[in-house]
Length: 475
Image (cartoon, rainbow, N blue to C red; front, top):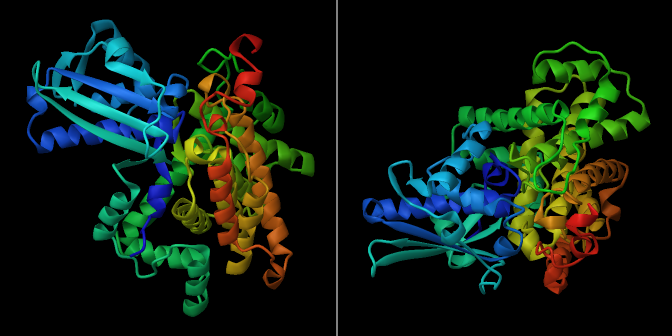
């Protein structure tokens, strides 16, 4: 049976800076609480210990993995928690040496002892973590989870996770790869977004689909807005200065607006030339990932580290390409992007700890290129070609964050991924799909092979590349 992945699995609302190292462990902590409730031992727990393994350990401090685990164990929801409350919640835990487990009962918690960073890797995946609950001096309950990218969390084997998914979902158009997607668009005479919409309707009402897609977009828009209006230094010790604020001020000048929607309309009024287009797109992408780096609320697209590409390209379409575009085109864009991301996840990986940055920025650029191509009138063949072109020019991109922080080179890479996505869509639009030499599925296969061949030190460990060429003191 096919693996059924929803658009809303690929585009999740959460808190930065990393989907695999922050959102995933946060969700794992929630699942652990749920397990303990199910077997009715939550009220018997006297201590909880968390062991982080592999990439979660090596870059966990910079990615706020320890904070995410504490917030998850506290019963906080990353989708709805007021981000301004995060610092005070963490400070209370650290100062009191206690944690309000599941927001239901308080137990001792010494974060320096009860969160253990183990540099060794577990066999199944680079991002492993084990939760252990102590019921008394001798009895304990333990579960191991794997954060496999994009906020997805599995227990034991990915195969088992797929089986559980298949029990709950059956799509009218089951899609495992790009060839199958193209087949359905041809036989059904539908756009890619229309095929995706039919699949989504098999799981939820049209009202819910439309509401959630717009909620995702509004979260993206608010994130860009906040990033463009926030200045200062990003947390973490690298002393990275926010740049979106200054870029935005230079681009928009004196303007009157009071909220993100009014701001969007104000940008649409500006006269934009080629160089300014590059600046605007870069500004949008920088804004999102500066918010992400500051533990702000973003949408994984498909990950937090690559969260700026899709919003930046969608904003490009709205403010440069089509001023009349509205909710219809926004939903169309997001559905195509989500479907392309799901195909990459099924055929390769969206985890930088498994595949390097090609699995994050590369995939997000492919998602954005495909989505832009469809809303600009591209055929299904051209849409898939746009995704292929975008990924082709990200193959082999390593993940080597300085200080384990999602800042250098991650923030700038979002601007590059967005620009490449726009270029890929334009190239696909002027190309006869019959002349395509490399199908998208072949590029996905190549990406996965590249991921397997890539040295592990270039996969989100901060043990290679820029991470060791430049140390914290140099910054």
